[in-house]
Length: 276
Image 1 (cartoon, rainbow, N blue to C red):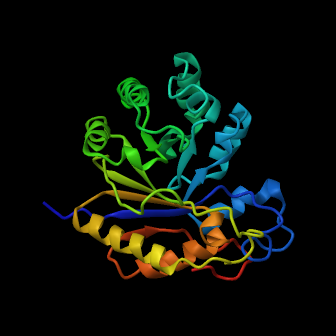
Image 2 (cartoon, rainbow, N blue to C red):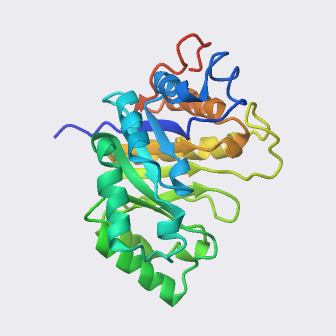
Image 3 (cartoon, rainbow, N blue to C red):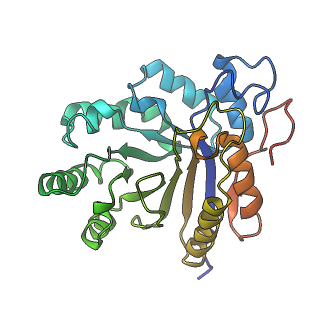
């Protein structure tokens, strides 16, 4: 049997950062309405962060699908009203509509639905019960990646729960959580380089270099590749270093020697200086 070639999907948390990204990343004159099309010229993966704050209109999702190439991948965050504000007990009809109806135009490109829980959602008994019920109810319906922001969840029973249901543990490089690599889904790993809002003045330049953090994840990608994982999704937030496209560039440079299939597109929008 041939060895699995690990595919690394590298992208940012959203694409609409104006005016900060115009010049450093997008060509001068780029309008917000054109941002996604320009973004897909540079990357082959994106995490949609805006859906966490409110579900988009159906025509908006349809437009996204029209602009995303066939070989593009997208992760979409579940609305906080459905997951955080319900304590991980979303109404069946509402969550099903979001995942299966609203996101239907993205189905062929959908990597994972990302469920982000707050630090206050720690591993107390009622929260543990809620997580187990959620995984049992929804993991067979939609591809899930769950982000837990309290260290109390970093225990073997929780890893086993997610593994049983093929749910991806979100490895979140963020203040308040140890930097650890956890793989629970059979075929993929999911990494979010989040950072902290503190000290970031804008999102146009690198302001807080994190070479040790980047190297940690490059090394981990290599370890996962040796372990024959199929896909690794890496989302870069602006607040990790200050300017997500530049962080992605540094990661791409380091990953070129790791022996993976790196999906990054051209690395720069048409008319812009090369990013990669």
